[in-house]
Amino acid sequence: MAKFFKSINLSRIGINLFIALLAVFILGPLVWLGAHAFAADWRYPNLYPSGLTMRWWSKVFLDSALATAIKNSLIISPIVVIISMFICLPAAYAAGRMNFFGRKVFMITLFSANSFPKIGLFAAIATLYYALNLMGTFVGVVIIQLLGTIIYMTWIPAAAFAAVPKNLEEVARDAGASKFTVFRTITLRLAMPGILVAIVMSFLASFDEAQGTYLVGAPGIFTMPTEMYSLVQNYPIQVAAVFSILLAIPSVLLLGLARKHIMGGQLAEGFQLK
Image (tube, rainbow, N blue to C red; front, side, top):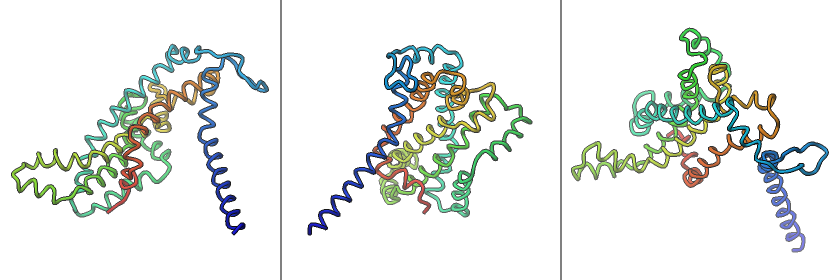
């Protein structure tokens, strides 16, 4: 019996140690960023910063290049999500509610397109961009970011639409409701949690996209992720820390708002092909 309790205690110690290491691994970089974002100067081997200041935050917002990158990210990402909704949600509804020929092939093709490194695809697209004069343009960046949102805006809503019981729609139709009323009050309402998760994931995919945006956007269009390339080399480390925190804020806020649906299985169910 003593050996049994001893093994349980060792297991608990091992689990707690693993959780502590995981917390350090996840929270450690955030603590480091937060400390340097407010440190006047902090260099090795000093254990403490020389002082605290808000100067680096004002420097980020007063720097024209960094402020432009922030503005571009906050403008481009919502536009990409809206366009993605108009393009993908009808396809998601068809894939979720209709059993047409080639449906599974269509869905698997969308998924497989995101299963390989995209830099080769971006390089091929760049040659087409040169022919269409889209390099370094706002439209070109929107299109390249749109490619990363298609899988989220199609797969997750398709699963959400497929999960709506058809008998509820049939009962409403028998009661005299029109097709549009049934769609608006039953189908769309029940599928909305999955659609909201898709919107959040699509926004984050667009907001954090760097490779394609840098390849086709530079030197005319820079967003926050692409500006990080020059930020690390050309700015003080405190400025990079502030900018990294600003880059992480939308992700943390949106994931926090969508936590209920993500933890509830909407994200996982969205990638189950039925």
